[in-house]
Length: 256
Image 1 (spheres, rainbow, N blue to C red):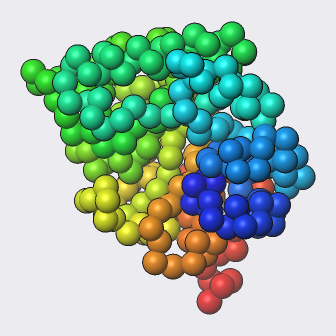
Image 2 (image 1 turned 180 degrees about the horizontal axis):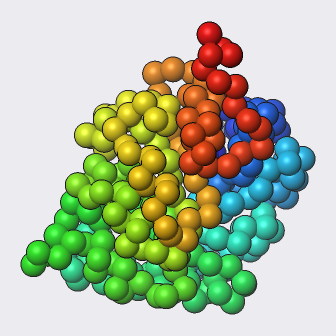
């Protein structure tokens, strides 16, 4: 969520969070705020807005910086840290295995603080195959069982997979889904649209039985006002009973 409004939040943290809450959103996933404001201020602002901290995008706590990362996000109050492997790490089965070693180290370290790691995909996990086997399947096989999944349905679609099928296959392991919409053609150039106005079949994706707990709206490279896109996305998801929020959206007839 906060990736969508990162510029606005860095200019006015508290005001931006209040606007998100006023739209009816119940929670946020942080991105790029702790490093800018410090964990204490971000935590206080989230609480003041009446929002739930669903999770936090943060580098995998592995290697020499691991404890410093965990310290910051423990102070934030994050229970789940979300990050991705690099695109180049899906060039071969060996690069996947080496990348997963870092993720699994992060899971071990996070567990020591009572936290969990969630793996967030882009498109290479689904566009790459080795010996007829999708890279994502190899990734899942190698990941520590303590690692949960945040499925980015948009990049899944762009990688050539069916997000609804993947959510169903992940079952209880998938806890979060990034909800974004658009043409799902180009990672670098796609202009996104409010949820429900693009290519993704959200009814199928969000209603298949699974362990999903949070639907996290994230929109990039918009050609309309960001908060208008967030409002229309909320109205689509909550108005159709696909997601839950804190307010009932006005019907399109009431707005006309």
